Length: 179
Image (cartoon, rainbow, N blue to C red):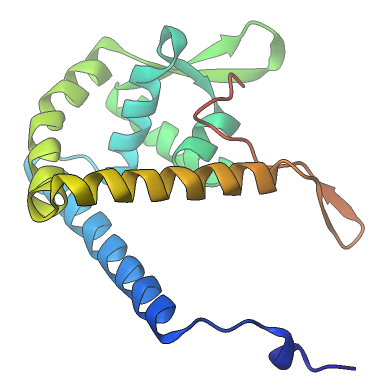
């Protein structure tokens, strides 16, 4: 039996350097964006992203699972965030019309105003940390590469995954899922 270590196709030096650069830049970028939003608008990056998702959703409403998928959080994590946003008056829970047990998160007028107030500073932070350091060619290539990666991962997640005796549903692509 071949050892698993021998079966792995390890990353080349260039691939390892690219992978580490991506991780380091992404971690630092998310930290900087969160710091800017908290400092300038008194809202976390996670909560801001939830408001963005709701603002772009039909009727400014989403079910918890697609919302969690859209912001790459667990359902319980997004539920805790929604609780904070409800308490702040930026989101409200409304009954789901096609599932009595379910609820939708809905953006309120106050939430839309908070998003509008926080967005200019956030966009400036994105621009200064990402686009100001890239050439137009870099932007096009990175956008194309990430679009390909996203499409690949969504396609791969459509297959049902079996873990032990438990069958897990496929991941949902929140960018195209209605529910």
